[in-house]
Image (cartoon, rainbow, N blue to C red; front, side):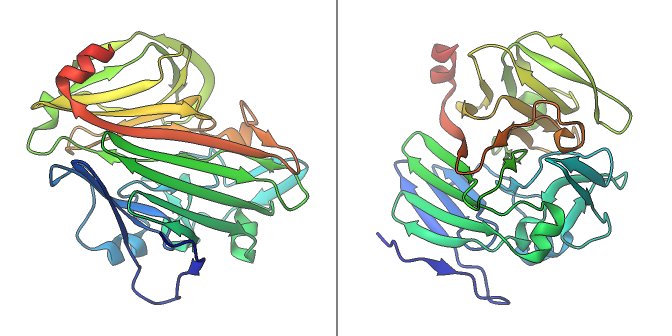
Length: 317
């Protein structure tokens, strides 16, 4: 196992790190966005990932298992005020991402985040991101450190992310993840989608929350042609979402620090994203349910992608 810190070489090819455990393997880019680029089960790919990673990086395309930082999902305005600081963002910046409507979303492009590897082994990888570059502070003006540790075992991949307010100031927390998962060889209309009882965010035409919530009953049926791009708040201890079919089940388990979720499932594509979120969309603008890490403290978010059989899923539920 290596514990030597390593930093990405600007302009060089991204280095990969592969982990294996049982029937699973996972690949991450430890210095290039700490991006998860592959998760295979019995040699079949479970993630959506394009062949041309360079183009995805240039275009700011969200792929694999990306960290959305410092904010997940959308911001209603290109500016926000928090902890007495006013920030104005440029939607045209090549550091940021916008949606089809020009609305900012998903924070800084993953390819802009140069992480420093801290530990690498057969089943574990850890990296650190120092939030101190001028370009970063222009987006999110809070000096701090982010650490991420991923661990693979025979049943799944666990991702632990910690925000460290280690630079003498308070830090807002609004990050999330956007894992693109799929059941290989099975059309999405035949996937069985399992969701717990939650509260759904009421959205406007820009897919931004308007501050109201509705009860959302538990769901355990085919995905069929359902179209999701919706935010949810967990209301019970059941914080697990899953897809299943053709004998396989993939579940995203929200273990710690992720009280919100976004589900993204466009009918034209054979993938779904069950997204862990520390705060609801637009939280930096509204301040609603926005965690604040006090100076010297930390905030930890943990989720897991569990892979098993459909029978195991039925026993869980």
